[in-house]
Amino acid sequence: MEFIAKSEGNTSVPKLENGVYTAISSMLIDIGGQKSPIDNNVRRKFMMVWNIVGEFIEINNEQLPRVMSKEYTLSLNEKSNLRKDLQAWRGQAFTEEELNGFDLLTVMNKPCQLQIINEEKNGKTYNNISAIMAMPKGMKVDPLDEVVIFITNNPETWINWEKIPKWIKDKIKKMEGYDNSELKQYVEDYEKAEKENSADINSKNTEGVIAPDDGLPF
Image (cartoon, rainbow, N blue to C red; front, side, top):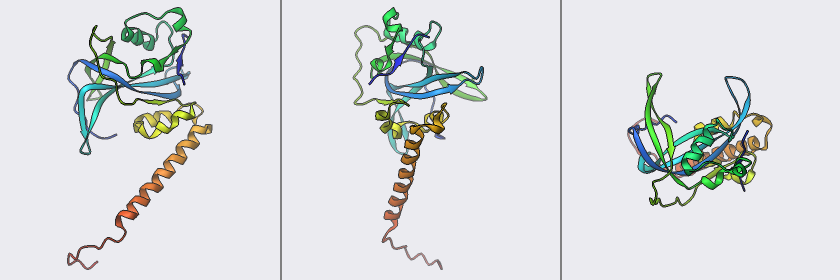
């Protein structure tokens, strides 16, 4: 399996402070061809997600790793953000051979440094990645037990649909050609099974349960 680039919820989460954080790439999620609101051109895009080492958040009484993400166009042209960030992350420029086809999966589960800054927009404060940098020489980071890969035209990776954040799923559902794709059928089958399973679990949880006698007439 490969993923090649060529030259051409409602939960309130405390914001990270401005600064440089050690991170490790944990998800690569292809979101397919997305139409630009600026020029209406369709460009294939993907989300890169990093776990912030040593930073956690609590959601529904569960400790989860703190993550940051960035959206990229699948292109290594000279002015692309992907090329700039990957060269800074790797600490070296691309060779001509790499520019003809670089497998992005080779950077999964690899550490880097992220410079995070807080930016205000429409009265809200957001954490944004302002720069990606290589790790200091000699500094080690333990790899993750697993990473998540999702590629829209690779059915072998669709099993990871359940692990993708909802807001990224929504982006995938807006990709060019989604309505006529096998992926849409897979997602609909998955969501139907998920809904039926949830209803079945709720039914089993109430089966045989006797309501307490609280004196109410119903």
